Amino acid sequence: MKKSNNNIGFIGAGNMGYAMISAIIGSNLYKPSDISVSDINIESIKNIKKTFNIVSENSNIELFLSCGIIILAVKPQHLINCLSQIVNNKKFKEVNEKKLIISIAAGITIKQIESVLYEKIDLNTQKKLPVIRVMPNTPALVLSAMSGISKNVYVTDRDLKNAKNILKSMGKVIEFEEKQLNAVTAMSGSGPAYLFYLAESMIEAGLALELDPKESVALTIETLKGAIKLLENSSDSPFQLRKKVTSPGGTTEAAFNVFEKYSTKKVIIEAICAAEKRSVELCS
Image (cartoon, rainbow, N blue to C red):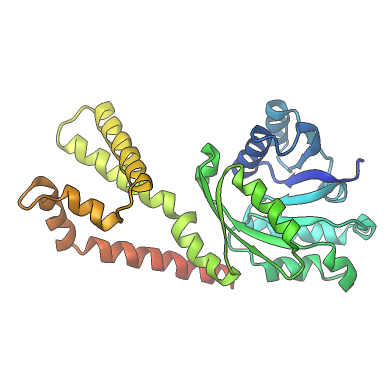
């Protein structure tokens, strides 16, 4: 078993773990030989090893001990149990080097992680295990993630920089106070689904207007891509850009008359607030 603070380990080899590994190798942050992964799903391990030629560990505790940065990429409902198994393993007492712990499990707070990770260790050892919580989103799969990040009291500037560099390899990152991560979850974590819902609706409208299905999909995707690109590259606000498209008595105005009839903006705001409320509930 190798021991080096230059190694990074992923506990969990699902979609997000796969995306992060692909990103950090593609950006040359880490060599495949410096990346380890463990997962209870043997097929996932085989697939990720074959794809990236990285190292697999026989157990989570072996990975934990061998890496300087540990990414907790298991499903939220499994994270606490996974941490408990690591902490309760007799080898956990061998921890004597600093290790940065980064969790991407939605809804699991830093306090919850600390309650398990720090339960059986003294203050000096706790300081060697700083914790960072991340809320990424699924566009990480195409290197376009928007991630929110929060830290605990033991995280140094160097730790934070290392974590941000990892996240920047697959998109953009903003630091938040942890209490704000519920809003981040509602906005960017769930956000892609809102756009997919709009795309779904536009495609179905095209079909209702008797467009060819393939053409309806192409029109929708390219229109959304172009609009986002214009939004990114314009100094105008979304409101101003919308107004420039909306001519008095024109087709766009006809559409917005229907949106306003059904208070669509209000519904969207209420929906995102409902997502934030549910995130708070899941974290409690």
